[in-house]
Image (tube, rainbow, N blue to C red; front, side, top):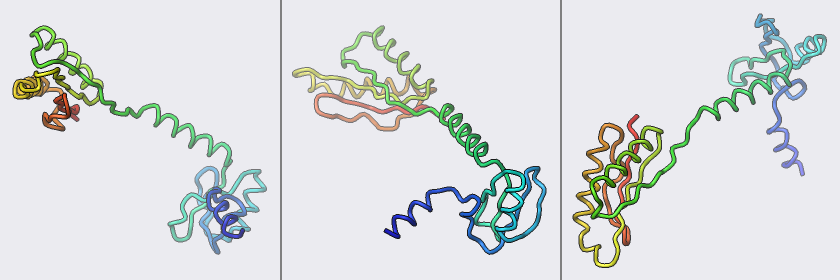
Length: 177
């Protein structure tokens, strides 16, 4: 039972009565340093202003606390995290499929597609499919994939060289940084 209690309090933020240090450095709402004092004294100052005492850095010596509105502080932190999530882009893997005896125009269309994917910051998986006895011509498929890699050289680099997987031959190209 005591272990469960301990776990719960560890997850909670260190504010007001939860700050358990003999001495702390206190910073006022406007950023002015109030000096080093005991937590009870600092808590009393915070309560006079109807604010909270929030632990900012427990690694410092002595630990640094600030008098602020914790609800507002927490909201700002969540807002920053939301903005950061909005801005980050996850690289998806987009696939471009073709056969080894592809016509020139169709090949160019596939290269343009792959180029667009790479410009968007996604990885491209170029796949050549074989049917029936076509698998004997894997050297032609490898030549086609290498040609595609050279055509896409300005936009991406080969992350995985052409290799055979079952009835397909595939190659992975990642965008240039």
